[in-house]
Image (cartoon, rainbow, N blue to C red):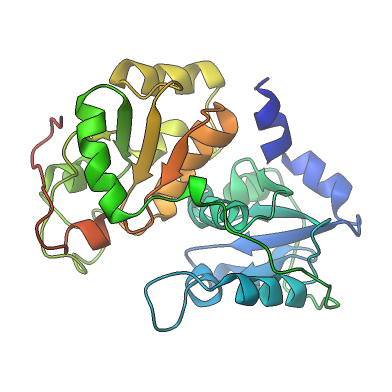
Amino acid sequence: MTNSRTVHALVDTDWLADHLADPAVRVFEVNEDLSLYPSGHVYGAILVDSRKDFWDPVVRDFIGPQQFAELMGRWGVSKDTTVVLYGDKSNWWATYAYWFLKYNGHHKVKLVDGGRQKLVQDGFDFTPDTSFVDRAPYPVGQRDERLRIYRDDVLRLIETTRAGAGAMVDVRSPEEYAGFVTHMPDYPQEGVLRGGHIPGAVNVPWAMTVKYDGTFKSLDQLRRLFEPLGVTPDREVVTYCRIAERSSHTWFVLSELLGYPRVRNYDGSWTEWGNAVRVPIERGLLGG
């Protein structure tokens, strides 16, 4: 991959091994299966539970800038620290954390290509030891709202998409997109009243962007995946899934790998849209 943004966003397992002792680098493991970390993880990696650490305990929203600064400081991260992320499920939740850090104004972030799966395949040494870090000063910053979109703005974007100036990407499975199920196959069907997709959205399941080993496909392959569907860099693009972890993965592909300038992640996603009153829904395998 030769895109300049890609070079800064993505690292391989050799890069990680070479930088484990770098005091300016902090490694986070972000998994769906939280039981993996205590069984073995990258030396010095901090376990991140996105739901517990990033989400407000009462309001369905993220923690605020003050709480974010306290969290980063407690993890030993300063504004000059490079945070390196990896996780299971080909980096579902790791890309969610990447997007969340960027949204909160921390720009020095990298992702290990292939995540935990690739680290295991490459024989990376894991340890069960828990890491302790010294607190670091972290200033209260500002969120970058250019990376996030809310329900009312998605409603307005439906007409923009129909006019050919925008694009919405539903990264869920075809069964979820069509409305046959309301969660991924083999998961409990819960949390939403109606199935289907946002009108005009195209379906590009997130897993189509990765190879068998969990690493990303080439830039040419990724472009051929999105551009024929009208998801092009000249358009305003929105990604969504069920709760935004899979859509963060596709947001990463479009924004950080392909360099699309206007990509926003709809973190309300189908959990909000499928439960909302008076919002349009389409069903079936052909959208828009």
